[in-house]
Every structure is written in C-alpha cells, then in structure tokens.
Image (tube, rainbow, N blue to C red):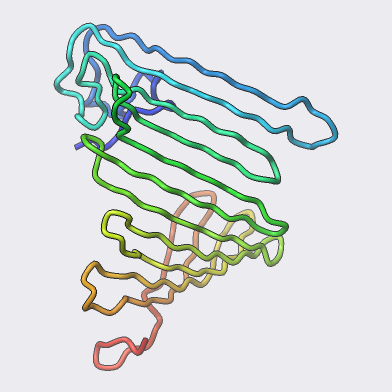
Length: 230
C-alpha cells in the first residue's frame, strides 16, 4: 500500500503519489494559493520571512484506485495547508494541516518549533494523524549543543500521547566533516508493557555523507548469561 498523503509540497506534482502504478485518471484541477512575505534587508545577514499555502484537488470523476489516505479517490480532496515564520538566529515555526472540506475536522497536524541558542538549538515537534490518514499523536523534543564547529552533543526524547507513554531517550556525541559523520550513541527504549524493563543500548555509528550509507555496531553494553548489566 502507498502511505503518501496529499500536502502542499506535492499538490501540483504530476506524480503526486510518487508511484508508477498509482496514476490519476481523468481530468482534475489543482487549486492553490501561496502568500509570501520577506522583511526588508537592513543590517541583518538574512531577513525574516513568512509564508502561507493552501490548496485542493478537484476532479470530474471519482478515482477509487487512489489510496484512501491521500483523499484523491474523492471528487474533492482534503484541504492541505502550510504556514511558517522564519526568523534567522531566533526561531522558526512551521505548521502543516490537512482539513476536511467543511472545515469541521483536522485530520493531520504537524507543528515544528526551532529555537536557536548561542551554540546550539532546541527543536520541538508535535504531530497527530486522525481518521483516514492514521491514528497517531506524538511529541518530540531535541537539544543540539555544538561543542566545536564539527562536534555536537544531541539529546532527544519522544512520547506517545495516545498511550501517554515515553518511547525513548537518546543521547549522542557526533563529529562531522565533508565526507563522514561518526559518533557514539546511548539509547533507552521503553515498552508499552510496564512490567518490562527499558532496553538500554550503546553503539557506534558511521554515516558516509556523499552516499547516505549508515553503518552501526551492535549493542556494546556487556551482558552476563544473555542479560544486560544495565
């Protein structure tokens, strides 16, 4: 099955589902509105800017072969929106939504907030999927601190708001240059079964940046009798 949803980025794409097998049939109209604003350049290196996008696909006939998640099987697709405000060096905010035609239900929310520190940044993400798009609700937070120009410390956590349980805590220290990224990572994963202990792991990872290939070791935490010591 294809899990691609309609959004403002693929609204005007010829191949919205990014698939050679899922080709839309008959005549359709893509209707959208984009509004952009950019601050006049003063003494700043980069001006603040904002934008709002909204759009919808309208078809002559229904197209039952299209994925339900995309809403493109209907004559009138869901409304997709995106709003952002970028203030370089201060904060960035981006909100994406998928809304029904009557503006009665919001099927998808994705809020990203990034705050810049003197030597790092904090990222917060909240997203939820409802109805035909999915059944999820998560909150994630990430702190990045730059120790040097090429070395950074990252701390992240994410929580399942549907079950009100923490999924994981992660800590990593990475070094990166033009060709390679490598680092040590500590991770603790929690189970929905409260009787089970969290699974703790430490591993070494390498990413070849030109190719995007990832290589990681297995857990290097020592164990006795098949049981982890931590």
